[in-house]
Amino acid sequence: MTFDELEGKYYELKGKHAGGLLSDEEFLAEVEKLSLQDEQGRWWMIGAKTGKWYVSQEGEWVQQEPPRAAPSAERVCPNCGAPVKEGALFCGSCGYRLVAEPVAPSIPAPQRSPATRPRGRGSCLFSLITGAVIGLIVVGSISLVAFNFFPDLQLEMGQGDLTEILTMGGGGLLISILGLFLLNGGFKAIITRRAIVEDDWGRRREKRGCSAVINGLGRLFFGILLLSGGLGMMTMTFYQEVLPWLGS
Image (cartoon, rainbow, N blue to C red; front, side):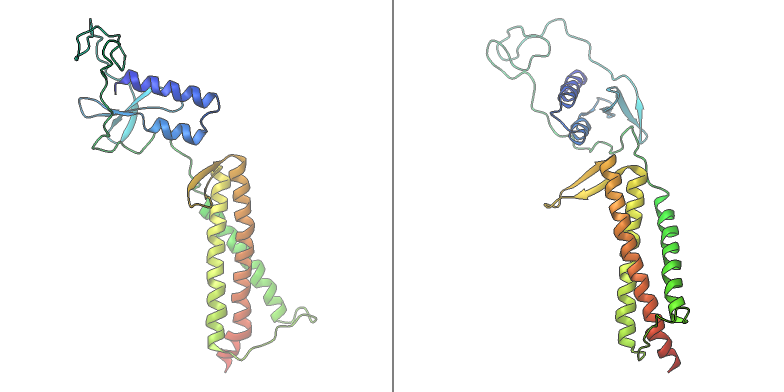
């Protein structure tokens, strides 16, 4: 296809998107397919938001006007020789197809787009800080009970069973790690306002805006629950099983 044909396809997609026939994700996916390789081997694509042409130069997309072929004085059908209009797909006299079927390029187009997506760089730091605070609260609370700061609450000491230590401690560790992953995903969704989810058929799609923030808040809630429960299990195992085992 030519640059003019791709531009026509872009404005057709833009009209469908403006009319509500295409969602944001579908529009972006279709625009990413509008790429073209010129005679010099350079790849061109249309920016989804700007509608302008970008050329790939050393791994970067640079805005530039593409080289366009000069219009011919007269165009004729190669099958019957009848004159045809510029841009026509079929001959009006014999019905001969004037444009060949598009062939997929052998070299894949660069995957980078001109607009870079924001990344949640601080999500990992927030997760670590939140996990540390929750850990201090859980461990401190159980420690106060273990050292009899609350006479009405007491921990029953176990027998120092090694199997119980591995079962409860290992389970608490796995639950805590899962909670940290959920915390990190929740913070990332809130910071970037984007979240990747899967439907019942395993298809991945992206949520944006308020729906992504709500998804992130849900991950934070369950992450805090799992992290608190896992740290509680490990702390209880330490006081009930590990200390008696060390003292035996």
